View 1 (cartoon, helix red, strand yellow):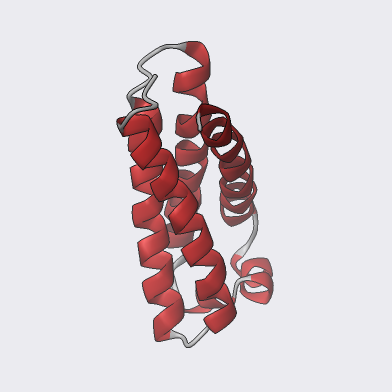
View 2 (tube, rainbow, N blue to C red):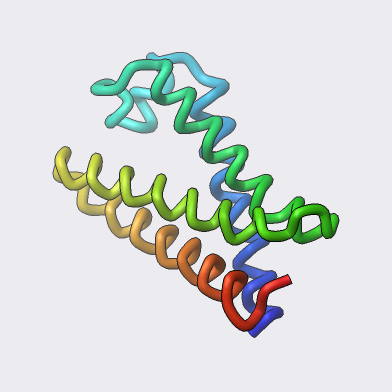
Length: 123
């Protein structure tokens, strides 16, 4: 199970890192083309969400890999799960069913990491 958690704990941040960098690094016009929900959201909020995703991605891997404050890894997983709850609510309000499926999968993976790292497979 520890190996499975590590695999999820490495693959999950890759998604959030790419998503966060995309949100932080692109203009509002480019974002609206690839992420339609950004049309209803201020650029500041989109950048904030992207920054949270980047920090969460780093928090999933770095504390555990370095051994410095490893409790931050499951806390980062909980934080990303909360972000995904917000994403699910946003996509539900906009009736974007395909996006909800992706959000639920990411939420489940973050929850598994949090459960495992707070539980029997803590660092």
